[in-house]
Image (cartoon, rainbow, N blue to C red; front, side):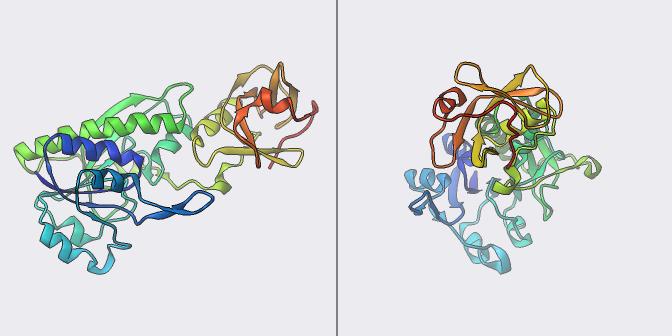
Length: 310
């Protein structure tokens, strides 16, 4: 099938690779513009662009699709189908209507739950027991289109958002392969309307949203830490020093929220929550490197009874 692929981050890479392996003609790849990254702000291409160029595909990086910016180009490419995976832009009507079979999207949740930009992270943040991937036919709303296919998976008890992200990227590629194959055989396929009353929104995460609230229960705080890993990473502060928390696990103990119940290299650091406590795992102090909290405590003294907070 002749396909235009639209995607940007790592999550979209397995899907593009699978469509290529399935033998589809990828007549164009749309991705976000290159962006500066790292301390030196080196201009870096998106992962999808790197894969596409490695396969000799035509890559387009329009800063916007509004006001008919890509209308002539899409008319020239003449795709039968547009496949979207974490592209990062809403598609205007002229894009949605340009291919014969419309536009489909692989979304990292069981729609209508977690529409929006960060569905995988939010499924971990709030402690969902399961999630999955939904293939939907796109419309002008935000993840509101008819659902064409779903696959479901359990979220591991200790799984981080980053680990789940990698699993769902592969699940999305497999489900997309099945759906596109079916469309190639059957043409337009019937979808199921979403129940808007069951929807919720997964807004974009930020550094400001990563502050640990120690008044939460130990389970809630644990889910928060795993949901913020690998970015933006949950954070707190001890003695005025900002501390990123990459992992933790439930522990015995009680006290005031944020109270350090023990802190030494042998026993680690246990912190009280609103209910229960957490033993910190990997941490990173401002200006330092990521390490086990026991190693960090060898160079830093934290007194029992200290209250953590940002």
